[in-house]
Length: 422
Length: 118
Image (tube, rainbow over all chains, first blue to last red):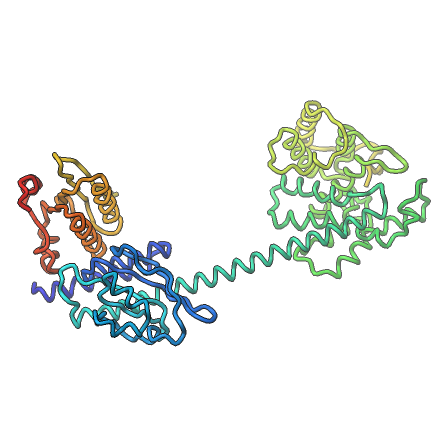
C-alpha cells in the first residue's frame, strides 16, 4: 500500500474515532478531552487545547475546556463583540512578528506559549470556540491538506461545544424552574398551614387538630406505600378537612354543654361546607376535595353527608376518618377528658369494619409500632401525642392487633351503630 | 471478555511498561499515568514493550506523543521494543519512527539504555 493511501486510511480511521467520541455517552469533560486527543493524534501535534466561547450579556468569554501538553495556558478571557477573533473564518498560523496581535490580545499570549495554529470553531456560522495546536511533533509544518482537514474537524468540535452549551442552558433553566417550584410549594404549604391554624383557632380545644391529623394521615399513607406525591395531597386534605367549620357559628363550636339536635345537624354540615369551599380551588390532586367531604363517612354506611359504605368509600377518606377520630380521642374536649393511648387504640379496634377500615387500622398500628421501635427516620405520630404510654405494653398490643386483624372478620353485636369519636 | 492493562516492572534502573490490547484512551491514560509516576519517582529511563499490543488509534498516538514530550523535557530516555509490524508501519507512515528508538527485544532496549548509547 502506498504511503499516501495508508495516510488516507489513517485519517479516515481518525475521523471515525472522532465520530465515536462525539457520539459517546461520556460526560462533556471526558468527551472533549478525547476529541482533543483524536485531533492531536491525527495531526501529530504534541500540545493542544480547546476553548469554549460563551456569549454573555455585554461581552463574551473564552474558557479552556480541554488541554494537553501546554503548561499554563491563558485562562478565561473576555472577548468584545467587535473583536476580529470572532470573525476568523479558517485556521490561522501564528506569526512571530506580532502583526496578528490586533486580532485579539490572546493571540500574543498563545504565541508565547508555543501555539502554532489557532482554528476558529463555528456552528452555523457562529463563533463558538477555538482550537489551538502546537507545531507537529516531527517538526514538519502543517500541509495544505492538513489545514483543510483541521477545518473540517473543527466543524465537528463546534457541534460538540454547541450541544454542551445547549445542555448547560437547559440545565440552568431546569434548575431555575425547580427552585421556583420549590419556593412556590413552600409558600403554598405555609399558606395552607396558616389557614388550617386559623380554623383550629376558632375553638381552643381543637388547636393544632388539623396539623396533627395531617401528620397522622402521612404516617398511614406512607405505611400503605403511597407515592410521596399522593402522600402530599392527603397531607393537605388533613390540613384542610375542617375548613367548613369556619362557617359554623362560634356559639356552637365553643359550646361547653352537650349539643341539641339542631346544633348537631349544624355541626354535621362541616364536611359539605369544606367541600363547597375547596371545590373552588383547582388542586393538583383530583381526589383531595372528595376525600375531605367524606372524612365522616363509615364503612357500615352510617356516616355523613352522603351515607357511603364499604363499596364506594375511597382509601383516602378512610385514612382521614381514622386520623381525625384518633386525634379527637387523644385530646380533651369541654365535655370529656382525653383517652390514654391504649384506650384509643382499643377503641379503633372496637369499631373495626364499622367506623374504620381494618386495612387502615393495621397500617396505623404498624406505623406506630415502627415509630416506637425507632425504625422510621421521620416519625409522624409519636411527636404529636400528648399522652403517656408504656412502649413495651403498646408494642405488644399493636403486634397482637395486627395479627388479629389479619384473620377473617364477622360483624356482630349492637355496637355497630356507636361512634368512637371524630 | 477481553481485559486491557499496563504491566510495569523495574529492571535495574529501567522501568519496562507493557500495555496490552488496544492502545486507546483507556489504556493510553493508564500508560500515561504510569509514565508520569515513573518520572515523578526520579526514574528517567523507560522501555515501552509493545509485545502484547495489538492495535493503536489516534488517541493512543496522541498520548504517546505526550509521553515522548514529557521524557524529552526531563532529558530522559525512552525506547520501544517488540513492536508489531502493523503498529510499526503506522509510526513509519506518520513519520514518527525516525524520532523513536525501536529495538527487536526488551533486553536489547535495556542494554542500549544501560550502555548510554541513546
